[in-house]
Image 1 (tube, rainbow, N blue to C red):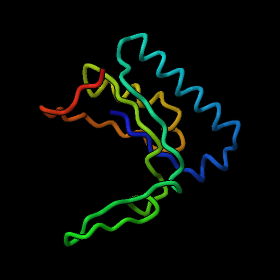
Image 2 (image 1 turned 135 degrees about the horizontal axis):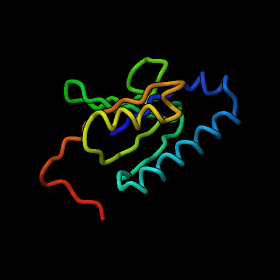
Image 3 (image 1 turned 30 degrees about the vertical axis):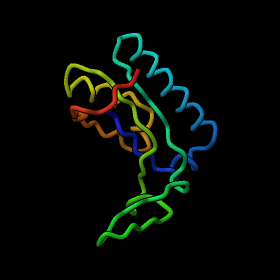
Length: 119
């Protein structure tokens, strides 16, 4: 899985046109992956200001507005891909426009028996 961490302030400074261009570039990347049979699923997230965090502490539910941690880079979206190894995933992550102003984290997905299967 490619987890895309964005620096929202950097994107604001880059401007709306740069952001829209990056989105189109990311969409092109998904089409390239689809053509190779590597694409499974992608989704951007709304800005971190829309986040709600849920924690359970001492048996009590605590709901707060905002992201789970104080950090400049926040999870902005993901791409679930099917590749042969970590090297291939890293190469794809390096082509994602989010890697230029944020971070694209590459992490294997753990498969668990008993989960619903997407159609």
